[in-house]
Amino acid sequence: MQIQDEFNVLQETSTESQIRESVRKITDSLGAGYIDRCLKTDTPPQELWDELSKAGYLGIGISTEYGGGGLGLYGLFCVAEELAYKESLLVMLVMSSGIVAPILEKWGTDYQKDKYLRRMATGEIKFSFAITEQDSGSNLYNMKTALKRNTESNSYSLNGSKCYISGVNDADYILVVARVKQDDGTLTKPVLCIVDAKDTKVQKTVIDMPHFSADKQWQLFFDNVDISEDHIVGGLDNGLSAVFCGLNPERILMAAYCNGIAMNAIERASKYACERIVWKKPIGAHQGISHPLAKAKINLEQARLMTRKAAFLHGSIPENEVAEYANYAKYASAEAAIQAVDTAIQVHGGNGFTDAYGIAKLYWPARLFRTAPVSAEMILNYVSQNILNLPRSY
Image 1 (cartoon, rainbow, N blue to C red):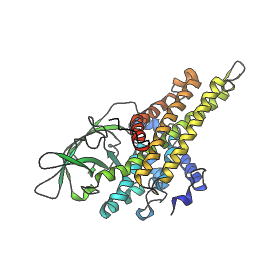
Image 2: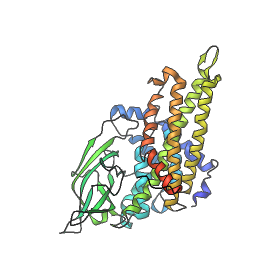
Image 3: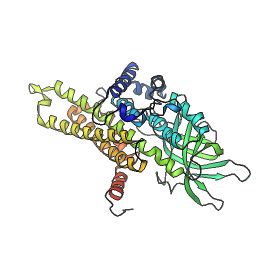
Image 4: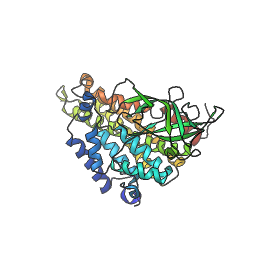
């Protein structure tokens, strides 16, 4: 199936409309405040995962050869944007379906695709993705997590730590980015390996922070975790290429989440501005209210168009070319989300900070996405150096 036959960058097709309407019905069926209830009971959003699985949306981007929907990243983008619009951020959707699935589909062995990818397409299993470290961040060549071959067997040992890793308590497996450790102790090229999330040699510590979804953030410690040869993805030589295969989808899907947050904020603020009467007229009649909302809407639609373009092109042009549009989308959408939520809070006045109106809680995810994954500053560095050919700044 050609993705271009099902979707159009410039306008919503019937296929896209059906996906979006279906996702909204799924979130509505779970009731308002579903994610908040998961947070209060300290439980993962399994019901949402199951319903998305039944509808085929967890594997919508995986090719039909492995049991997926075959609609590529654009199909998953539609799902993600609607989830965010309905305040149902599902970080594991990005980790498992967005990052790990494309990596396995392109770089996995037949064994790995049969064992993992097919089950990911149905939602039977979930993957988390571990790249960030405390000291090196996401700098692949400064990472200390090491994979060393055991001299007496064909297996490897994984040692090191990762931080700010999403949803590992709810994951079945973790795709870990490490570096190959030579006999002399030097660390060389990046490598990807599959780790059982329930392995007793993997220690997990939750990171306390404001929650914007039911998926928590964790610090991980690997203590001589046994890694067999068939759990290395892309071999020892293609780790870097395999990693980048998952980073473009991550940025595009995070942009989709930002767009959904902004859509929600602007819609609710506009409704409030029509209903709130001061001095005998709705506050929305005043340009001090209407113009900031109009600016937020314009910036949102520009960001959405770039996100649509990035998602549409993914899979049809090389990853290094998609990276340009993925970075544009991530940057623009994060800024649009922050502007939209800030404007919505201002429109609501004091009500914008109350739990009853639920506007202020949109701020944390919007603000987070300016910083991670990939900060606004690193995107500007990328554009400066790779698109504008300016001298490297670091």
